[in-house]
Amino acid sequence: MTDRLVGVVGGGTMGAGIAYVFAVAGAAVTVVEPAPSQQARLAAVVDEALAGAVKRGKLSHAKATPVRDRLTVVDSIDKLTSASDLVIETVPEQLDLKQQVLQAIEVTNPTLIATNTSALSIDLLARSLADSSRFIGMHFFNPVWSLPLVELIRGAATGEDTIARAMTFVESLGKESIIVTDVPGFATSRLDMGAALEAMRMLQDGVASAIDIDRAATLAYRHPVGPLRLSDIVGLDVRLDIARTLEQSYGSRFAPPQILIDKVTAGELGQKSGQGFHHWPKEQSATPPVEQQET
Image (tube, rainbow, N blue to C red; front, side, top):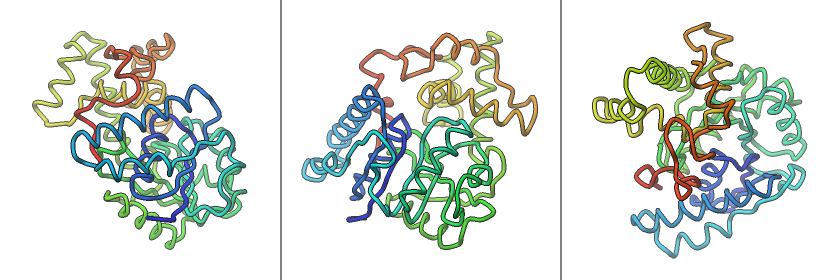
């Protein structure tokens, strides 16, 4: 992927992970993140991920050293490199915000425009674009460097060449892709949110502790991480946005439990805030648990 120009709009948890894997694969990556505090967290995430990869022998020191040099952070979309090969938006799951961001991305004229949305309609998002044939959903999973799947979501206007290019990008990261149609929640979010919301209801009903509910998933079903712990890593505010989106399409089975609403209202957003369904010590607040980090 050497000499490929990739833009990532949004330096949060997913944006940092996506930027990291593209930089490791050899692309020159520009991340758009206006908040200085988030810029600092982005740098910490990348540094911790690189250190972990070197420690476990996934990357040599020689290969890890130039990764940071391939990452540039800017504070506005108009500072993206013109005519990038790919620009991915990773801003919060809010339709109006994403449409505004996509409009601004299109002005920079990238070959491929992608959204990392996990629930919003690709066709609704595409309405903000003059040319939606080069627009596709590229749904990565957290931790991005560990999980090998990227869900590609085809909109009504997505061109076949766009799908082919997106598949090539995924392959260059050493990952695999599935192609799904534009339905609410796609394939993976419906599966994931069903488990996560039920785990939250179980905790709310006093069935078991958060630790034991997660242990049930990891030990009995060999999930790499339990649904409540994963929700903390994703961000409980993100979980709430997705649940409300799916509830509009599928009804009460995706209604957010009160325990989730209460935690978001209290600012307990999971790993990024230090408290969610689990407590996250400060040293764990920048990156997912070490055992989940792979390159």
